[in-house]
Length: 188
Image (cartoon, rainbow, N blue to C red):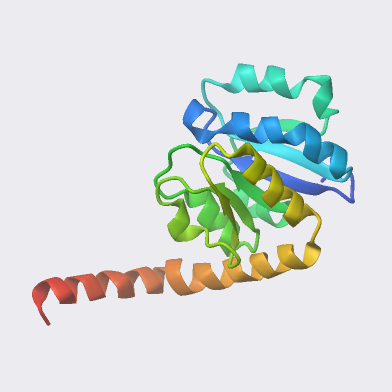
């Protein structure tokens, strides 16, 4: 809160991605004016670096965002920041796996993400997050509005994320999965 000058009652969304076109920042920014009006406690931190930095910084400075959207730059201490986020938003058009989304889930932070690439394998609706179709701004807006309006849903998805990360993506779970693959290939 202090580092980013956030009010103590803030519900802070984190957008964690390289600042490049395929990460879909435009969809997030397009949905924000309506969300900011509906949720006065909403704040948004955009983490990352890349070629769109100047363009996004200029857009965030617009009055429609009321100073409630901040460019937070690249961070290597996200584990410290995750507990302070209400949710992580990832509106990417293309994505491999999304390591930051796994980290958010493991930290008990719900994820709202586009169904791009491998994201549907790590963000499960009603388990650890809410997904929407790629480029579907009304779907993104609806998912965020539902989450911001329902603390119980946020808590449920956060707890589900911790459980999912432990059961499916922990080192032990990954080793066990690899062993099963090797055993099936070797026929044992």
